[in-house]
Amino acid sequence: MIVRGDIIFTKEATKFTIFEDSYLLIDEAGKIEGIVQEIETGREYTDHRGKLIIPSFVDLHLHANQFVNCGLGNDEELLGWLEKYTFKEEVKFKDLDYAREIYKLVLNRLWEAGSLRSVIYASLYTKTTSLLFDLALESGLSSYIGKVNMDRNVPEYYSETTEESLAGTREIIERYGQISHLIKPIITPRFVPHCTSESMAGQGKLSIEYNVPVQSHINESKKEIEWVKSLHPEALNYSSVYDEYDLFGEKAPALMAHCLHNTKEEIELMKKRQVYPVHCPESNANLSSGIMAVKKMLEEGLPVSLGSDISGGHHLYLPYQMVLAIQLSKMKGRLEDDMSHVIGLPEAIYMATKSGGSFFGKTGSLETGYSADFLVINTDSLMNIKEERSIKEKLEKFIYIGSAANIEARYLEGKLLEKPFKE
Ligand code: GUN
Ligand code: FE
Image (cartoon, rainbow, N blue to C red; front, side):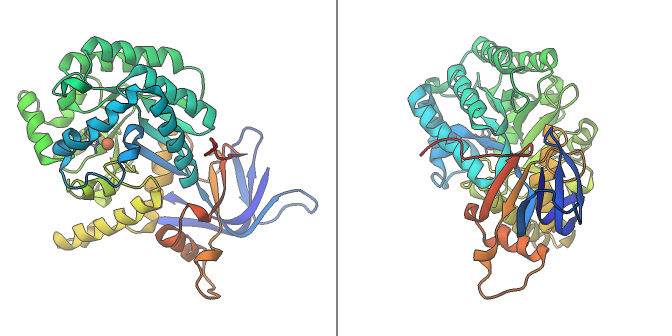
């Protein structure tokens, strides 16, 4: 397959690679063969001249069971927010009919937003988590999906035993571990305060036994960190609790949402283990959690990525997170009188594509050998007058003032993806 258009992506975090009016060559397996300026006359191609061809987005952290709460409950910090709003919504997913309705919407919205790959917190309930796997398999999207584990310090109406956590996680891995290269399980301890040591040890063992990656939250709010200290006084820091139980990237890849208040030692350990810090700017602002030191972490060589973290964040559409990531980095720079914190559009796109995409293998870029995951963007409606804009400026406008309506086509592994479910 061959696609013609203005091709732009981030091979590196700090700059764009641009091919004006070029041809993207895609092989039978859905991988990129290369980009060329000309092809032999007579060869067929899909014509997107004047439109942008960019890598599709990768959302490395979201809670499917919180989708309905987007826009609500923004008057609390993390721990109060969980108790007052979040668990009360998540518990509704015991009802499979309710879950089906919401999950279809979430998958449709991910498709719409161009987030063709994602890493999702599903449900505490194993049956409900299975349902999300089945729907995700039907959708054509690519996701890691985790059954949420929480067996301590949770309200009685929304809890499970350690045995249920571990049996449910194993059941999901056994059932879905090998059936698709697009949809895969991920081990999901909600966060340290909600998992007993026995549960974390068991989850770490499962991760090694089945070679399944891990996702969790870390260093999001100061009160949370104090809580972890009181639960694990022997631990050097928050990261070392996960690490003690093989949940921190040593044996299997790990991604950790937030990473706002990391110590130097924790950054060193993350580097050593190549843990993915997932930046969730909107959630961090809503829950007044803090501002991530994105630029520093990128410069440390960490695979910093982006997450919508709905409903901590209130938009699934990742360009909102990109813009806010840039804005917050400027605020951090100004507040700390250190403008080296500032990131620009290339870093934001890089986090949302190549960096996050690397969690899935060679995805998230339009370099040779990468999976042909891309979006076709029509920016005509964003040009107020007959503006002559460069490719970079068109992308800038799309990210800042565009919407899902500007995405004309979505391709995953070289195949056109249609909207998954009827609404
Ligand atoms: N920490 C533990 N659970 C959650 C959650 O659902 N959202 C966020 N943002 N942080 C958490
Ligand atoms: Fe989260």
